[in-house]
Image 1 (cartoon, protein in one colour):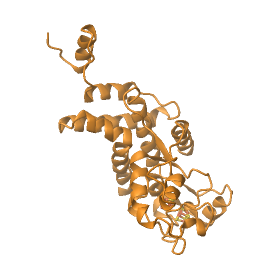
Image 2 (cartoon, helix red, strand yellow):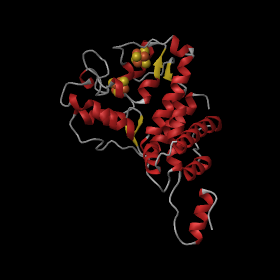
Image 3 (cartoon, helix red, strand yellow):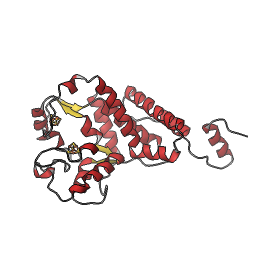
Image 4 (cartoon, rainbow, N blue to C red):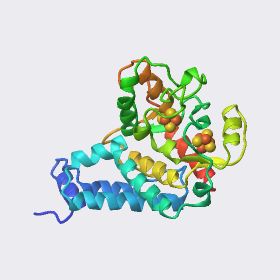
Length: 260
Ligand code: SF4
Ligand code: SF4
């Protein structure tokens, strides 16, 4: 008997005591059933739609399932999709972008007062670590401010890993640099925050984790630990992995900031 769908194939294999190989269709089913409690329904539906479109296109192009799983688990898929959402948003820049006070050398947002400095994916952590290897042992941002990101140049206050900076750095902006300075010192001034597209990015990655349960682990990493580890000469991603709750907390904070 020939099964007519991936689900039918799995049912038949189960009956025969075999386990059918995972397919992109199975992943699409898992995405459809995935649920991230900390993301509001609207954002979750949008993220699922984007992820399903990615899977459909992977299927159309005949991408091997191992490559799809690897892209989803590492965060490379979320990176690509998050960028597409961000680029689309920036075609008609909102006020927050048009009126942003951000400029080269203004780096109060690179003071990582929260300790971990944000949630980044394995894909981002690897890119960041690699970009910083040439600066191993050099003076870094911590010479300017003890809690600054180590990727920062302490003199120019420019990012030395600009092309490899994670999505959180690409999404943060402010209408008021003075508010950023005050917040870096523990204040709670208004005017600074993340682009709305960042919630889509987090939601996509959180859904990927749900969809890959029992297939592959999806970790997140501390940006502060990755950048300081690279400058201090540690092996890639040593002691930089976060607890699973870090992504949930980031999703909850992102939803709250977006008014969800
Ligand atoms: S987010 Fe704030 S600190 Fe960062 S560049 Fe913009 S104005 Fe400066
Ligand atoms: S990676 Fe670059 S942009 Fe991001 S916090 Fe560090 S220095 Fe700033």
